[in-house]
Length: 498
Image (cartoon, rainbow, N blue to C red; front, side):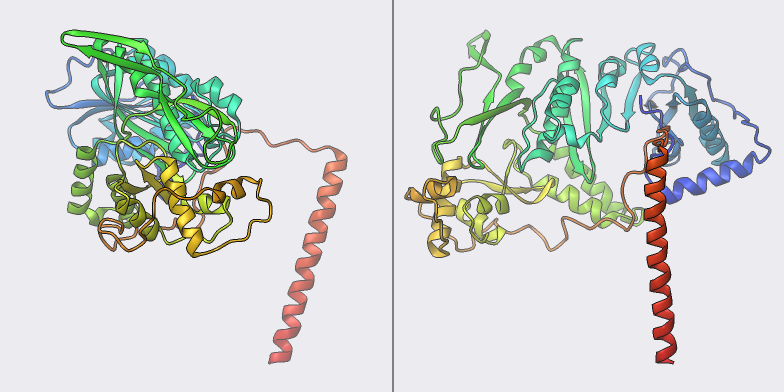
């Protein structure tokens, strides 16, 4: 598991709670408030009051999130806050005690391996929150067994270098999916994680229903419900797809892993036909293909769930310091085309043919006039998510280049081959209804200063040899000398100005 104390969701708030907890136990003892356990969850959930639910935070660290759950969410019967590090658990108990008896009565601190906690509690938790430092892969198998029927599974992955294709071998070993390092990599990361959770659930005749899947800063986070249905598990291959990506341009095609044929009361499942590409070489550039996946190819959000979130957010917006950012992201999610996996990056598409990109609404208008749907993506402000085939996308680019000429010296280059073809679709770049966003609210709000992940908990410092230390000392001395010179120069200028 994560078992890290350094990673904080809200750094300043966490420091205040940590300091307060230390003040409550200034003598250094780790007094345990009532309701905190040692390593196992309470034996049964049958005694919980009707309408109440039980939460597990498998990798709780400081306990900040569990404390917020206890203070801010109604109808919570118990929260098991678990971590493997005993010193972290002592700190967590102090933080729980510092937040009063109501929190102490709900938060049950556990010191154990998160996998063991979940393995010994099958179908127990109404919600399981897993937020590791890195991949959650080793936690998923026990998580899908421990979450209750129809329960909520909240999973974070921060190994974005793997999921986005920089380390494809590590991604395959963790998620059994091959990533492609392309413009859509952040949505691809979400779909790889969802496919992995689905695969683990299928082993126990269970399946997932995504409610919300977001790519945020340096991580991805998914919210899924887990149900038991042998019939739905048979559909699982039809919910996954391989990606055929052109090696010469931004064109891509999806190929479902399985297919389902219904004939009256007869339902049969087969491996899908392939390849999904129109020709054995890319029809736009003549290049080859690379294949990635399998990825989740069904919708990654529930429109009704997102609509409810937006309504709740608007009704209680004074509580959220990051209201503008949360609302912008949820609105972007709500506007996404639900049945269109992945997207194009407008600047990358134009970079391929070395032309200046049009405005986003101009390009969207051309797609709408051509009879296709189009939207953006919360994962990329330059995203073009459309049900138009790649040939139409390139025809619109060719029409744009005719109005804004470029010089391609090498006619055999990928750019030369792309522009050598005459467009079969004549683009209309006049503004179309639906090309603009629905309101003037911002969609991508900049983070506060000093935002980002901290160092991993428990990571030892890198030892340095004598040569490294001497080199480091020389660099440090040079840096200090430069600072001293800069300070002296500033003083001289100040005196001269005076």
